[in-house]
Length: 307
Ligand code: 3PG
Image: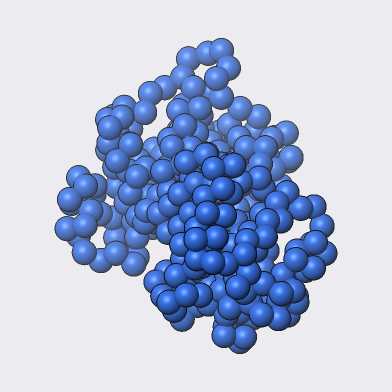
């Protein structure tokens, strides 16, 4: 059996070594395609592999067609919007993610961005503190929960909205106020931290109507996916509301215009960096290797996302 680790972004050395050790221990061969620049390299590398480990690399139907022996794809991360699930399912290829493995890195970045925006992007002048402010968590999954905990540690009042978690005790146990609608979340938060995946239902779902209801001086932090924002709506609300701010780890399509028009009120990282820590690379990479081997050896399908 052969497992390909294909990642356009560099992986921490310890992640690569750890993956190699897990695959070798299983008696399988590992192939590394790292920092590749051309999709053709991926198409060529997948031809004879049984397993594929990726980060945000796109697994299109073209990749699936080229991978004649492929049985499993593991996304070393949480979101799997980069994988054509239908194409994989049609071929009986199992797709998994590694939930929770890089969550801490993303949560820390979200909090860092809040402080950065509260302090005017670290430029001279009087900023504000997070203490005592209201933090709204949009989707209370692995990342959202950690952001909530950090927010509480900083003295913020934390609320969360998650349509998939109905059990109020789950929120209460963390001292978080459960909110029953997305409108209530946005209209009662000084900071909203977005943690929803990009799905057909969520894409473009955060737009003008929702954002315009936010309190005076509100800041939106997006470490999720750029696609969940309706950019025209965002542009409109930032134009009308000079008090509002937007910071993102995933530059908008219209980021240049946002930067030009709104200067200090907007921020985008140069390149998506939420999970870009050695720890997150190692946790997600090793989990992906264990899951790929576990499936190929023993048929374990835990964390399969295309059932
Ligand atoms: C995820 O979905 O796990 C995060 O967005 C991080 O993705 P990355 O590992 O591709 O940076």
